[in-house]
Structures are given as C-alpha cells and as structure tokens.
Length: 350
Ligand SMILES: Cc1cc2nc3c(=O)[nH]c(=O)nc-3n(C[C@H](O)[C@H](O)[C@H](O)COP(=O)(O)OP(=O)(O)OC[C@H]3O[C@@H](n4cnc5c(N)ncnc54)[C@H](O)[C@@H]3O)c2cc1C
Image (cartoon, rainbow, N blue to C red):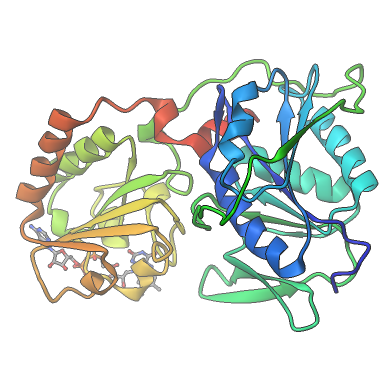
C-alpha cells in the first residue's frame, strides 16, 4: 500500500550528447498521471558529468515539479558511481516509486539500484496503475508474451519499474510550469570504481537490435525474394530504422532469425512498424501489436493485418516501397545514427 512515508514519484531521466532522450518525457507523462492520483510530488533526476543547462527547459510542459541535476566527476562513465549517488539520494528522500526505462542505461541503473536498496524491480512494464487499496500494480509480459501478469509490490520501497521507450505517450501536462531545478552534489567516491566507460561508439541504425529500433520495416512471405527484400533495406535506411521479418521471411532466408518478430521471435515496440507482405497471423502480431503507429502494405485488401493498421496501403509492395523511399530521399535529410534512436543513444553510454 502507498503510505504517507512514500514521498513522491521519481523519474530517472536520460541524456546523451547534449540531448534529452525522448523516453524521459514519456516516463514523466506516466509519472504525472500516477502522481496526480496519489497527490504526490513528481521529481525527475538527471545524472552525469557536465549536464547541459539547456536540458532543464525540456521538462517545462511535463508536469515535473522538481528537477534534480546530479552532476559530478566520474558519473558519466561509471555506473557504480551513479548508483552510489542515486541510492544515497533515494535513502534520504524515500520516494515511493522510481520509473526507469529499459534502455541499456535505464536497465542497468534499475537493476543495480534495486540491489543496492534491497528492493524489488518490476521489469518491462506494459502499464501501471493502482489497486483499490492504493498499491502500485504493474502489468508485465509473461510466458513469452502469450499473456500478462499483474505484479503488486507489498512492502519493498521504492517500487522500481522499467518500461520500454514508446510504452507511454508524451502528454503536455495541464497548467505545467518550469520545474524547480535543484543542483545536487553527489555523494559518491570516485576513487573506487571497478569499471569505467572508455568510449562510446555509435551503433549503425541498420544493425541495431529490433527490440531497440524506433522504426522497423518488416517483411513477410509476400516480399517474394531476397532481392526484393533489398527494397525494404533501402526504405529502412532512408528512415533511420531497421528491417525485420515474419517467421516465413526468416525460413525463406530473407532476414536472420535474430530479426524475427512474433511469438517465437522478438517482441518489438517501435514508434513506427511498416508491415510489408505480412498477412497478420496472431503468431506474428503478438510481437508487434504494441507498436505506436502501424502501416500495412499488402496486395490483398482482406489481409487480417489491415485490422490493426493506422494506415493501410493496398497494392504491390514492389511498387509502393520504392516509391516511398524515393519520396523520402527527395524530402528528408539523410538520417544520422544519433537522430535515429535517442533511447539507443542514451543506452550507448553503458
Ligand atoms: C508455434 C508457432 C509459432 C510461430 N511463431 C511465429 C513468429 O514468431 N513470427 C511469425 O511471423 N510467425 C510465426 N509463426 C507462423 C505464422 O503462423 C504465420 O505462418 C506467419 O506469420 C505468416 O507469415 P507471412 O505473413 O510472412 O506469410 P503469409 O501468411 O503467407 O502472408 C503473406 C502476405 O503477403 C501478401 N503479399 C503477397 N505478395 C505481395 C505483394 N507483391 N505485395 C504486397 N503484399 C503481398 C499476401 O497477400 C499475404 O497477406 C508461428 C507458427 C507456429 C505454429
């Protein structure tokens, strides 16, 4: 049960290369919803070394009441120092809930904080709410996404949860103001870290894992051949995304098995999923139904997958896909690795 001893909801925000990761504002929006229900304070924490002052302004419409900037030597490159500093702050302030993302950065912080604070962790939440008696109730995927489980924290505090980028929408908080910024001097001992990040190498959007990709162009049996699949590669490249496929596309050798989406493949939650030549079997859709926007390209207007499409294009993908790619080439600047995936960029710190 949420008790009067729980003091607010904290959001672990993420930044990389001077930019705030989008997931920070997604978590802030969800945090705001929860904080309103509890009538508690909503706090965001930004941690690192030389955090750009301009990032504070990004929280203006988020509903965050207080932004804690934890800036100090070693925090950028050493996860142990970040965990030391943050766990001290949590012990002192006693927030009831801590929201983190499932990026590499967020995940690593969440599990280490849970261990340091001897509390529980609900990973990869699909949704959050409260039970009638005011306990945080986390819905998690279970049994390889065939079902979901509801997890309730009993006494462990803070209740640490992670959620994938794209799980929550960014909503402008009504009446929100610029949060109060508090500079925190970290209590961490830079003398004793075991591991340090030496350098960050940007990933190539084309080889990013499908679970992290914000944009996925996915192909099925209808793509017809490996040669045709190159059309999807080119569209993915133009969008700064990755390709993926149905199980049949994997069986036919169009895409590697690591990129199979579905019950026996990966579960993905991109901002945009473009399904090309995929019929919409439950075995496939279970792995991509949480995508924010779904575009379907299929020459059979009765294909089941159109039922879940935000935008459906009936026609031959061999004509439609290259037409979209050349239109993008005409109108869009070439994507960069950093622009392609803010969450990944943040994750690349670890
Ligand atoms: C236990 C089990 C686990 C499974 N796990 C998975 C899984 O993890 N992932 C998965 O995807 N499947 C899985 N499957 C397989 C699943 O049941 C389907 O067979 C598979 O998803 C179908 O793949 P598809 O949509 O690519 O092919 P199809 O069902 O054959 O659909 C092809 C589509 O392409 C369209 N098309 C054809 N030509 C064109 C064209 N030129 N332009 C546009 N559209 C065109 C057709 O109209 C059709 O809708 C599993 C099955 C079982 C039994």
